[in-house]
Length: 110
Image (cartoon, rainbow, N blue to C red; front, side, top):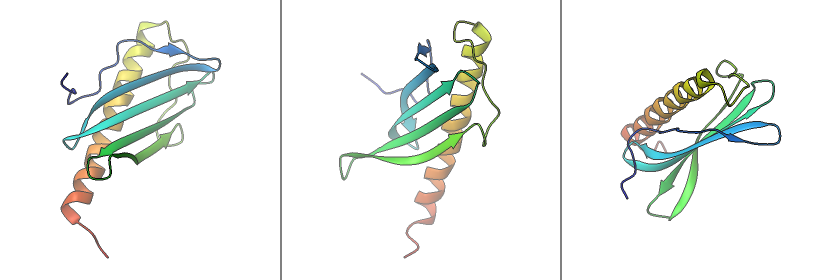
């Protein structure tokens, strides 16, 4: 199975307090796991973790929430909610890619 370059969200999973979206994709040519958890008020928290092939472990690359980006719609069954989540995932993916490229190009500072 090939890991997609971009995050792909087809459905939103209901939780006790809202809904969740998750996608495996590539960030700067490395496997990444993007998780977005939305609460009933539209607030959210998101993480982007990248798999380090040298240590065989996942490392946090980006953490964001509704203080960094606007709140998301609260109804997981509405089509506009899915579109808003897809857009937010694209934003998170682009930001994580920028962080990873910048870190790789700048190299170690110590």
